[in-house]
Image 1 (spheres, rainbow, N blue to C red):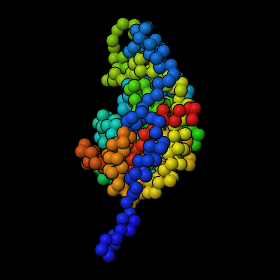
Image 2: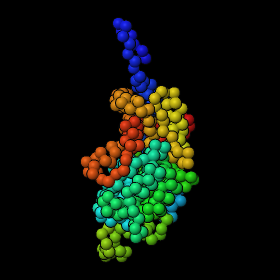
Image 3: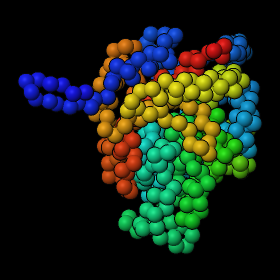
Image 4: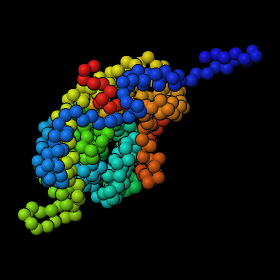
Length: 403
């Protein structure tokens, strides 16, 4: 826009914040006020199943719904086994321990992730090693990672060693950001070359598929989350996925305090964790899983609406699933064009004043005080994305089935 004042001219090229807010209103206009970022939908057998737990008294970590929930998860994802836990962080913690992670080992994780990924590594006494992400997936960048490992590590005696710290790098943890699958084939090739165990952080990607195969079924183990804001919720909960029967047995054992089976004696053979999902939560999860196909259908419909509507707004791009993947579109995202990144705060402020809940991406791991000194590669992609990304309302209820 050109403005004239006393013969002087100034040019502005600001993003139309009002156009962004109007687009959000157009898609979410039938929703409650305020419009949440992601709210659960309870429209199936939730009341019936939870009431059964209350009526029978089976509300803790023993009951039919816990086993049923695990069977349903394994069947849906195609994993050999699923072990239900109290949350996704506990699932990832145990998965990493079972994968052989030990104190002073390093684990490659994306810098752009929820803090639980790094925390689970730290719980094991290990060190997060931060890697950059791919702008097309928002997850780990295989090509950039391979070049970095080639320059900074050596494989000796079947182990990958960081030449700078002289510590072993044990595992690679791909995270499927906002439900969008990363390029698993290429990451697995990198992991095999550098003798790294793959443990997937699939916390956000229930219902997402990479080349027709469900996320969380590519590595040795994987972690899922069923927090209240996930596509399927148990209130609070998680699960470990694996195809290895012995790992599944160990996962269930250590998440139930490593108690040896006996009708009345309390005997434990190692340090375990009280991580077993309660029956009450599993009951909620069973009812939610029954509705997952419909949830995914409505999620995809919402993504299509956002894509069409924001296609009419200059300077903003709706983030879409990679070509090789089918995403659950758990948490939808906008990317501002680089020249408009300074407008993000204005958009967040205007949306919140209108009762529309938005948020920026998580603070990058190396920007948090406890992970500031972790080893890391160049993180320019993650830093660029983090400056421009906005998560927008993604509740299943925004797009009813009858639309």
